[in-house]
Image (cartoon, rainbow, N blue to C red; front, side):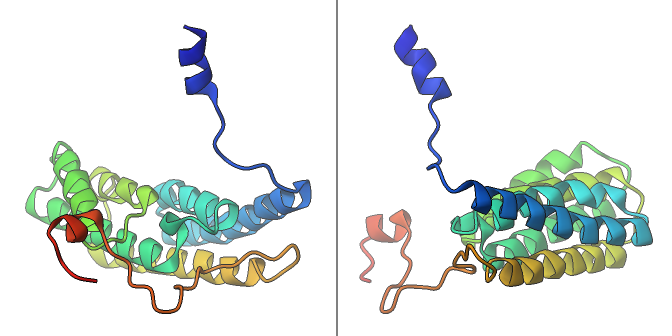
Length: 184
């Protein structure tokens, strides 16, 4: 039984310098302050929640594939498309948010731009009365703000590499590509 408890409580994140962790918190504070101001101006305060989760990734885990700009922009774009489509086709039917979230996750996986916080956007699209154009604009401005701040933020000491650069000569390949026998 103890082994199972240890497995559930084991930490997998490496330790790091306290200054780097404090810098991550400060970056998230500034980023969410900017996004919160945007939410206040647009009247869409629910968007602070998914963008807050994005801040955790881009400021606290800048090396994660899920925190990279392509994933942030691509994930939010696909999730917003699914949420707005569901809201337009099935207005007032919140049950469709489950379908929209499922479709968004499938599309993010297919296009290899998974960004977990974006999964909340269809819930916002179907749960709040808003216009499609304002949702796309707000998400775009929020993403640009967080990514721009993160790029500048990670250039300050202690520096972190963000965004990650592809390794020379490497082509990302999925397991499905390898199973299908495709040559790299």
